[in-house]
Length: 319
Image 1 (cartoon, helix red, strand yellow):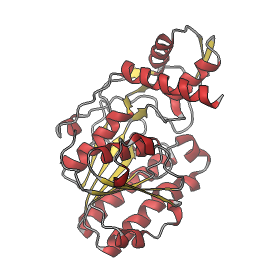
Image 2 (cartoon, one colour; image 1 turned 135 degrees about the vertical axis):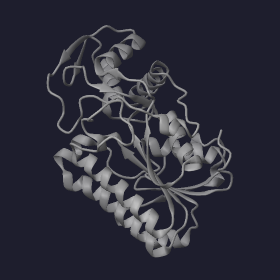
Image 3 (cartoon, one colour; image 1 turned 30 degrees about the vertical axis):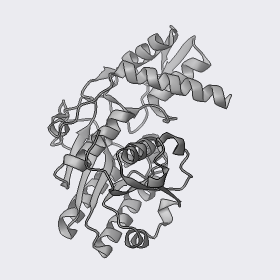
Image 4 (cartoon, helix red, strand yellow; image 1 turned 90 degrees about the vertical axis):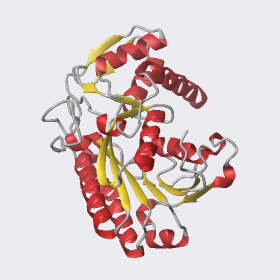
């Protein structure tokens, strides 16, 4: 439970999305007044435990927002800028789209902050993709950044703009380099894909690459806890924090754990080819964010079981 959010005025861009919606609920349930800005209607209103008076939904496409008007009309203490592309393959296929949804939107927001002299706190979800294939492991925040996808480039550029603007124009800011988040409401990426594949065919599962890709998976509720911890306790001088669980596994080990939880034993078939723009191995140092008091609550097994339950229920309803 966080203690400093009571009565705080908060804007969450992309608050209808996977991480953004869970963040919105946690903020509201900790006493914040939250405005969600997204191009789709917020659909999780029943999850905010009776605190609907503390919630406003603005349905607008963030690509066409008059940011200055928003900032002048509403006095926000915090902005969590969660809107943007979060898909590495899409960035490879359509780098212009990634640029517009990530870097361009973020720059427009920053310029409006400059023009309005806003003095609150901006929190930005960057990505582990800024590291590319790391030079050394475990990866700490001082690791060289060599992104290998347009997505990683755009996230790194956003980090640098935010840091410089924060120092030049007098607002607080921090970025979180988030590793592999999974959990309920995520309808893409590897954990969801494996669960859905097994539901469709429990006899066989296709795995991209050779299965030896190394990842650090963090459950969405823990990711939200980390984001809020930085907003509350970080220095917020434009610095960056790794956000992960601190534990690694291979993609094959992940698949085996999911299969065990679902009570199946499919044949694994490997493609032998990884997707363009995706790194081979990540092992993360999270000491910096742990020094603020952050500690993950979910083991990978516990998070997977909650995710399987949600995906199974969702697929049943859809079918």
